[in-house]
Length: 161
Image (cartoon, rainbow, N blue to C red):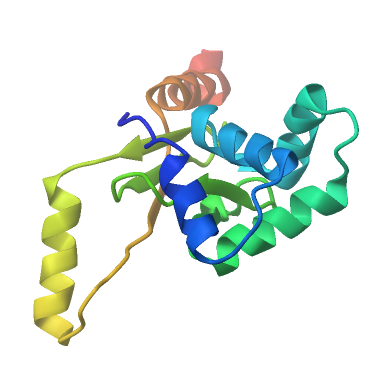
């Protein structure tokens, strides 16, 4: 996994837009940038509340909306593995694909030349100028593939013999 860029770039972008960087917003930015996880609003709120017990949910949701509208964070559904839950990450990372296990919900990030090649192929084939790309793929992680195979053997009629 490629580490996230510093929250400094986001802070600079907010200042350029005239957005005040309150202590609470800085806490939220730091958590989004440094946890290494894809956080939903409630998880972000719970982590932020540990750092500032006075922080409230409204601040979290308003800040997420502000950052999303400013193009500084992405809102992801991660294959809707957890239903309608949405997750957030900073846009300061290199473009990448999210690979989601449809059984356990594990999320891996894939960085590589293949993604840049696909982006170029789309631009060439469709005449688009791609400025940002988000890719999600669903499948089964190695652990779940093993477990599924074990489960299939355990319930197959031949296993009863």
